[in-house]
Length: 188
Image (tube, rainbow, N blue to C red; front, top):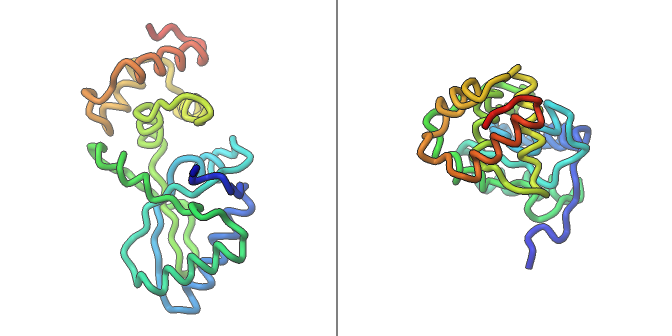
């Protein structure tokens, strides 16, 4: 069974409302929570290049698990979210990072949202290099434009800060070549 067969998409407004709601529940329970968000949720919130995302790729700091589960269950119910609306599978690729550079995205009273710096997010998109329907290529294109990357060397330098270059294989090299083509550069 496909884990996303009952997908409820979240646009930037809905994501913000979800985080506000979670903050209020945290405040009621005198809890503080820190969430680092990645992937499609970042591209939807920060870069506004996606109309919506199917889940929130994130890492949640340690807290009172039972109370947090109740808050997350309540959030899922109130916003009619799919079962896998909060996705911590991002923890696996994070194991390959040489370093993690996070910055505060949004501070609520009891909820702090962090995000990776643009360079780290780009390196992670290059490492993933998933084919469509994944949005890695479009995301990497936008991130390269945001960082004003014009040469393959600039891109490789950023990647090497975050990802061991031994993990860059044929799939990633083809991804980089086509990325250069789309940006208007010859990155052979």
